[in-house]
Length: 374
Image (tube, rainbow, N blue to C red):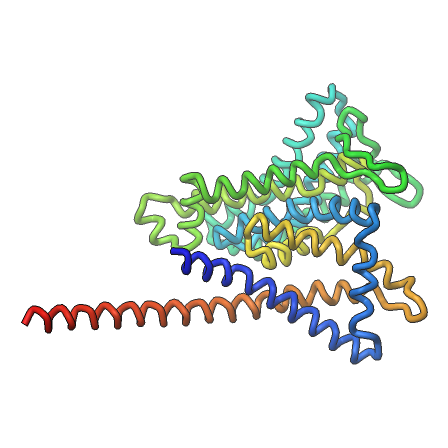
């Protein structure tokens, strides 16, 4: 059993490590081709890590990525590709901001209300794709891509000045939320910044994700259905029910992804609110292999590349484009696909050799027993 556990750990770690190494090598090749030092950009970004303000920015950004990646991973474990996390996240943020700006309740009621609005909005939007899949057989990829576009149009409508939009300079917002809906953070000083209080929500969601998938009947049914719908049906599990529930839960979690920033910092939705978080989360979930611990490390890495990369623009005597970090992120996703498939094939061949050796040993032992019996 110890040998098996070591091999399982090796297979789990090999994929991400190979992907990161391959991404660094390919990025270095790009730097060399452009006549730049292939090592210095990494050292420049690592030099930013000891600064407390950068650490705070990384943690805050990683909390949003982590929640969105958990939403993506929930779909992956069900063999569903919820590419609509970005639309679910943005629409949930807008509706939460609108409710927060127009409803005034005590904090102990206002904050739970905003959390529920975000979760229900995301679940509703993802549920549309789920219903289309189980009733009409529409691919969730196609449905969620279309829903992303529809969500963008709805956001544009909601933020019109004739609806709930509030013009602030050249920016269109949903208005400032009532202070009872602001979620307090951890203030580390004016020079350092504040860690979003809802970072702890991300931690709780990660724990809940692991517990539900690995310690509950629902989690077992979800994983079984994702592995084989026919096998799950033979054990009495409704595949359609699991698909719909998985999309609803994935969308509900996606709806919470923007709340650390909304309730902890901006307190309004505007045109400058981050976009593309859902698509970034796909790469993070892949790199983290749908494991809550792996996703946490991947989210921190992604946030580090984003928050430390601006230092490249101000490097002397040679400045480096901060897009180097973006190139590396893209290459990581590309390398993940290659490395995971290579590791999977290697693991299968290794298991086949082990099974063959065990069968050969068992056959030899039986032969010896037959000879001894004669």
